Length: 116
Image 1 (tube, rainbow, N blue to C red):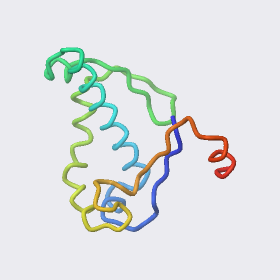
Image 2: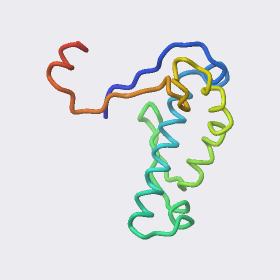
Image 3: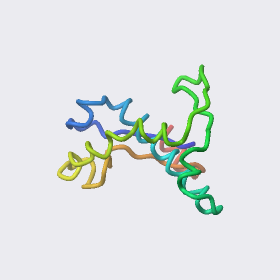
Image 4: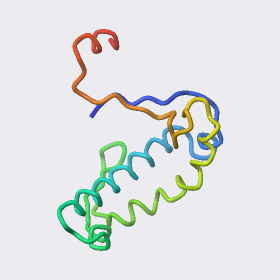
């Protein structure tokens, strides 16, 4: 958990996906890659990790389903093509989708007071 934020700077990616969709896809890709990396650390071959089943919850939390990690990652393939637009974007500082950031918990009490 943490505080997610998106710098509201116009760009081709947000035009094509919308800010909310972009964030959802980035999170989905990050979760899938994290699972593959964790399983690889435990000695599982990448092909087996990609075929593993995980429980995926809808963004609104009302629906859950079992999906293959490879399917979850495949749904985010367009991000690889779209990240080229981030190279010259001042909001991303040249990083792919750098306009989307997050602050992880725990926050200091001083930071929480400032946010409030």
